Length: 445
Image (cartoon, rainbow, N blue to C red; front, side, top):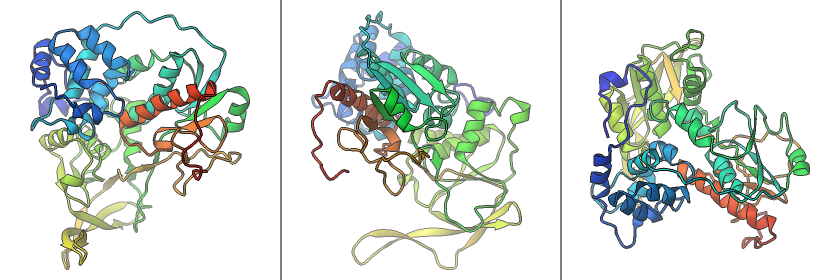
């Protein structure tokens, strides 16, 4: 797989890597040792038969490989580019240099042929899905294959949820998202905010079952002095303006770029925010309170970021944001690891080592929490942080209402969210046929 040179990458937002050639795919697939216990499969939330599909690639049976993948994963072109494989299947690979499973999946999705779709016998049951992100659309895909009539309600004017909002165009082009989700047999109602333009009670009257999969789109704002100052944004602000307003191309939506930009966070979103700002011409420093081992960003993404000139300031704590109306600098302190009497390693500020970092633009990538339903009429049980309580079958405290993905289970990976959607489809189907067992945990609600 060829990665564009740094100078080329920084000029535009075109896709930065091309798909494997046949020769490259065969070379990579043949590195797979076909382990008997297939730990990679245990690491896949979607239960894709990785060992078997790679064997099909080794045998140059690309159509069969695609069929094997799509039985468990309806969106392989997306997952092959954006799945956090370093936290799932690739992490579980036994090899010192793991097989690049995601890149092989991408190759199969591009080169394998889909079977002609089987004619589905429709039933009269209607399912409402709130949220057109990975979890909601995964559920819609699997339920539509069982003949249900699906309507997806989405607050945004497009499909994709957090995937479309937070994944840079150079990593996952908008056209790929549109192409994959076009296959979902459902009616879509965009710009519908549950609790504002439509209430859950209304859905309960018109649908036989409901899945709430509205994701975790609400950014976490740190409690720190000065966070209210001007020129402080969230990663969500930046990536949404690029992905949905074409701010890198359309003059009226262009983003003013500071001279001393700081991104705060250690996630994949944080690093991709910094890489996006580099493409807009900014000099960027990323600050994170831990070392690189605690960063959840893909090591490959970190490598690319370093190549592109991103500065890292790790083991550093921001203590105060300084300036007048707008941000001017950050008061920081280095951190060091110390052992407590109980033997636990904790990070503590170094004495007399505070320093000031000039900063005229700060981007917060310090996490997200569940998107609030904002529905005063709902009786759904929720946690203090706004997550919807569910049992092991993804059922909520409301009859016929299920919840999955970041809004309930807290899963933070693409495959994990899709797996929740797949599980929700299975549980809703069982519930519709009155075959769903009672919860093992009667104390859930």
